[in-house]
Structure formats: structure tokens, C-alpha cells
Length: 280
Image (cartoon, rainbow, N blue to C red; front, side):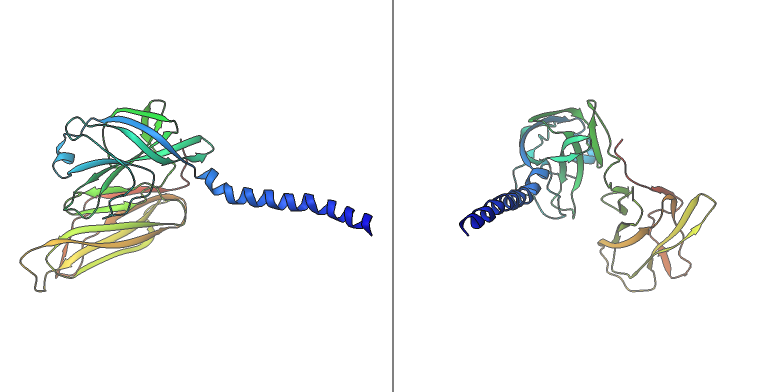
């Protein structure tokens, strides 16, 4: 019986060790794939004195990779961009993103205005290093990737776009580069005095053999009482990008005589392509 017990005990030890080792791997795996590292970041925003920035925004900050939320100021350490020179320098705690192309960090340059409902952000995905010098560049509200000492549009991630005046009537589209089965979000912002609105995205139909057409209608009623002042209003519509291909979105005039069109895409065509996002 003594021999039998000893053999069984020896058989159990490797199994227990393998179980513990596997458990450790499972616990540590998320930390490995989402490691946070200190990065020293420097750069100069060349167009910091432009009217598009100085005319509307009171501050520009450089933040970490944590996704921002509208109306919320990040509480983690961040850098301030000098409003006179455009220069910034300091340390950020960045999440290291790993993919088949290497290790990356996302650096957010966020314009803030206390009187406006949202911030405007530029994202630069740069190869991970303890020190990152972005050099001199112009701020643009989109996503870029640092490649061979220059910035290119990042085609491997969902990107937003804004059509119209950011501080007037405009539509924010997210993403503008959808994949099949993505839901595209259209956020319409316009100044309104309280009158009801009519907004709709029509169904898809074929314009020709290669382009799928979708019609948009957006108008406000003219036969209702309104206030003397106006203020920004917004409404969100969704469009399901079902299959790969070329799409065309157009705004068609409202047919009712008591409706006045709000010009978002009148006399314009918005083309976008549905396909898999690739990092070029």
C-alpha cells in the first residue's frame, strides 16, 4: 500500500503544477497584451496659431490611449500644448498595442472648448519607444499613423469625419470606413428654435451596376410656433453597412410644403466604400 500511494502521489504533482502554471498564464495574459508603459513624448503643432484652433478652442492637451468621452476631461496625467509655440514635451502612461506589424501607442491631441459640447481629436499611432519625437506637424481632426518618419492616414482603424461647420450645421459620420455589418452612426447638429424636425435614411437601391444608393431626408417644420432664440440640437441616425462595395449617400429635398430642408448634404454626394480595414 505504501508503494502504491507513493506512485499515485508522484503522478499527481505534475498535473497540479501544470494546472497552476496554466492558471498563472491565464491571469497574466491580459496584462501582457495590454501593457502600460511610460513614454516621453515631444513635438510641435505647426498650426497652433490658426484661426480654426485659436478661434474656437481654449486649450490643446496631449493624452494617453484611454478613449475619450464627450464632455469629460481626462483625469490621468496629460501634457499641455503651448498656445504660442505649439510645443509640448513630457511623459505619458500609454497602453502598448501589439499586432502583426509590431508594437504601437496611440497619442491623442485633444482640442477643448468649455462652451462647446464636444472635443475635437487628432490621434497619432506611433511605434512604441521610450522616447517618441513626433517632430513638427499640422493638427488635423483625424487618425494618422507614423510611418517612415512621416504621418499617413491610418486605414486599419475606424475613422470619423465631419462634414460642414463644426460650430454650425454639420454631420459627424462614424466610421467613414465601415466594414461589412458595421453600423454607421450619423450625428446631425443644427441650430433650431424649437420646431419639430423630420429625419430619415431611406433604404438601399441600386443606382447603377456598381454603386448602392441611399437617400437622406432632413427638414424642420415651418407651420409651428417657435422661440425667438435658437440653440444647437442634434439627432442620431444609423445606417447598416451590409455588404462590401461602393455606396453613395445623397440628401433629397423634403416634399411637404410645410417643411424646410436643413442643408447637410444638399447638392452633394457622399461616397464611401464598405470593405475590410487594412493597415497599409
